[in-house]
Image 1 (tube, rainbow, N blue to C red):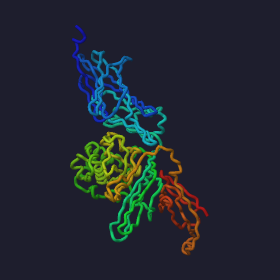
Image 2: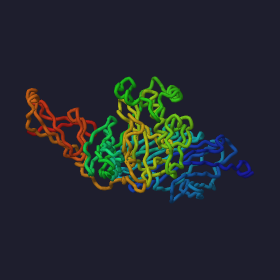
Image 3: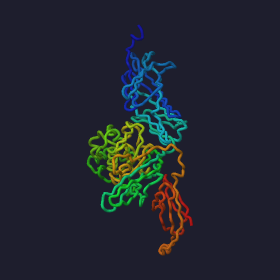
Image 4: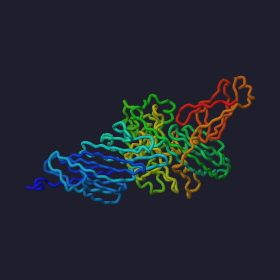
Length: 570
């Protein structure tokens, strides 16, 4: 009797779908182990090797073929082999899915016998350079129940530079830029990483404002803000010059203009942004009790679109809240709830407008939502938990609009994005993106990539200030021109530069207080805050101050939050 008459020939089907799911047939007949390697070269080309071990669980079955499906990714140089012998590999394309099927000519017979083989291909869709940052995005895969062992190895070339972040955390300490992940690390989560120093973004923004009244009026416009340790703005030019530049209570940089009656004004802003990245360790978060009363009072209120006092939202917040966990851990529970239960409307990009629903309607419907609804819902639930939270509205660079969608259409191609941030006393303000977490399966909670450029912060109000691109008197032109900078930036571009010089003092009261008069000038192109713990200076602004004659230097805060000093010039 031949071997074929002793065994039942069984077609073994396996699906590895990078963008959505991972399924196995005949789980009772086979167990599987996987060793997957992503080896990226200096040019960003990735060689993917999927080593598969199929073990027979019973006596009378064999695997005759293996199918690997890949969604939304271009691949080339595909091959399959075992023991240095090629395996016939069939390639099929259906819409956005490529299916590779290995047809076995050598069968593995017998219980507990294992067939070992490799499918290999190359792609340029997993690693890409944006400006000065290399980003790696390996979409999520649902690990099959049949998998006893599932290991992913990511190899990064040294030329990519320093690691900015990687998520999830590797299983072991990396060696030579090689990172290893086990199945438990990748439960419904893709791998994302960034390498380099920081991102440089150039921008040209036009603000169109109009005074429709018959009297003079004051109008404020929000310029891209500085965010400590995350985003620093270097202003190239702002024309015409405003009457005043100041910080609002949310930390926005506001330029004030006085318009005559019936006057229209076009304001042109040019500049450069430096975007840095950080990654938090959720287990090291702080306690609610350590949050200042001022921040709690300002950023836990119920308001339009953030209906944190509503009964439904209060009930959900209580269900999600864990008393024994810290602020970041509870915030992550909200994030995970939205990522798992909300559904993004993929047709938004084709619509000219979409009405903002707010948190309450979004939580009732959970379907066909935009980025605003993900953000509003996170803020409302967080505030119901007494976790301070607010909104970031800005520009995001998307390499794949299906997994990283942009929802806010401001006409003529000005697409913006909305994400959230919460306050943890151990970390300060932490930016997160539940929308992209939902659509990509990548961790946008413990870190945010360097492709998010904040245009405005909203915390005291859910409506104001307006972001750049929303100030317009016409709908027939594009107002935002934002792109990565590929050139080397002079380090002085983002260096704080202050001078302080003594001035004649004719104020008798100040003289009696033993104070001198000084002129503080910001001679650089970046704003400087917390000068002497009291005031803020935009680029090229100056301010007269009175200081004790004993003071020989003035303190201020740098971009990374450290203290610096400038000597007083007599």
